[in-house]
Length: 185
Length: 143
Image 1 (cartoon, helix red, strand yellow):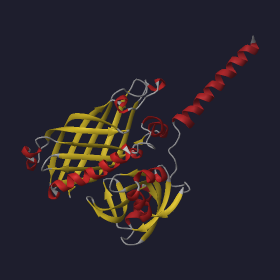
Image 2 (image 1 turned 45 degrees about the vertical axis):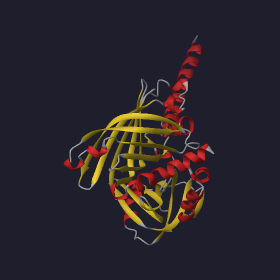
Image 3 (image 1 turned 135 degrees about the vertical axis):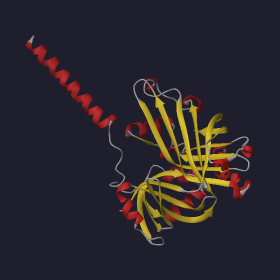
Image 4 (image 1 turned 30 degrees about the horizontal axis):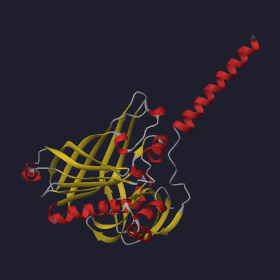
């Protein structure tokens, strides 16, 4: 029942952002999220280019959602471990963020310059939801908004258990980069 | 003494061979061949989309991590950076036309871009999930 409620919540959060003020919503279906793990034995990087994201420039609401299986790794074995053992993407197929960019109403995107912003909200991975607050940038170019943010995720905070034998292969803090090019709805 | 040396050398050689096998076939094993793979399921693209709309959790269990062969009418073929995406659209939503989005494998880009909107096509690829607006098929090819 809780799972169903979360599914409905995530499904409708995009609609909520859109309904706030349809003309002011910027969207992408091919945002990029990368993560990078730096550990003594190896560095691991993965990229996901199937990120749905929406930004309401009127009130700053910002959401994204992505299928976990769309993370692509250089090595097939890493990708297999990531999906089957760590994030258990068969049980938890999506990750999502629902939050806002405070002070959006006072930002002047029309200048075309890169503007530092704060991004805050709730990140959900493996059905575990945690508050996050990080810095990012927004830049408007022609009709599109380029948004970038980097934040640190601790796997254990999201119930991602790294077995002891992998502690020298996988960092305890993972750098997650969000890169979206949003177009008007 | 000589026998022991031979045994130790043999063990060392076997150990090196075992390490190389693990290195090449486990640690560096190739990604699955989605182009050559037999589809796990064949169905209309519309049914795939509607199944996710009707019961996302059931559709997740049924389709994710499977090679699907789907058929439908092309709504759009677009180039997004270095990706080519072929779309089947079944509903208007917040993101515009929503349905099934197939990221085409690079060896089929040319063929995909030559297809006409409105023509019926069969696409095979790996289902990674549902984004809230679209079912995602990756490593897609034309069987």
